[in-house]
Image 1 (cartoon, helix red, strand yellow):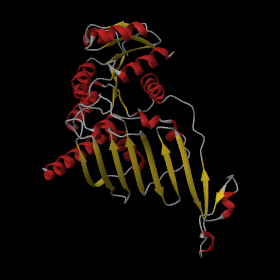
Image 2: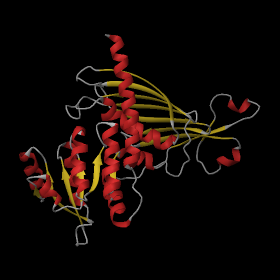
Image 3: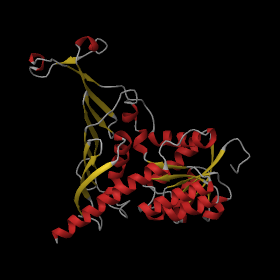
Image 4: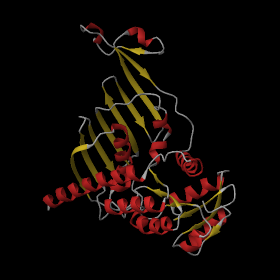
Length: 337
């Protein structure tokens, strides 16, 4: 750490929509000192700096000289170049997702971080979503996963396809939950409003037999961020957008249901030779700000040596899978012409 003060000095590069949120939350964090922001749009940087009572840096070099940690919330295509400069100067980096625009650049960030002994956390914020956190005490062993991430169109993050923009959230969660190597990927998609893919569907088969079907769209009428998990002993519905969770748990012995308030019998399932009991549950979802939680996790890693929650290695694997999906979509699109 460069600073001799008790508080870690934090800065933000890129203060668009997401960067401004990071800046606001850092300014409210009692464990850090928000020193300043940098953006190529100087007027925007000055505005955000004034709003949150910090400095608007004139250059990244000036920011480096006064920072211990930096959040990178710029366009994805700039992540590698900016993080390279920061890492080589010993700055601990929180990089918004995706970690980089390509798999090769993602790997280069890992190599640089290892060489310069710098910590990297990647902003796959859904790992901290209260709806997912609500299931931390429940064993998830997915066999089939159905995912929908649909969003109304917004003229930002269109420098990348919907796969890198939206679907990558679910790719990261999927790889983390299934914890098995990817065996096969099928994908298709179309570009409608932008030059990159706006609607995409991918089917991923894992070596352990689990299968996932992912759909992402950034030109939907309604927003939806749902993750449905089917496994041997139950069904879990995670609504990331509305932060709600539903569970249907399967029990062989009705005696095991005593701790639950509501048991459901679906049809004549009690009439089969080996009757089952199905219980419907809605776990309590904690009240928390996911971005604030991921910031806190990174600070604990930097100051206390705790493990990084979303590592550069994990984020790079998500980029690798996203890249495969994009390449398969491009091949599919060429066939349509």
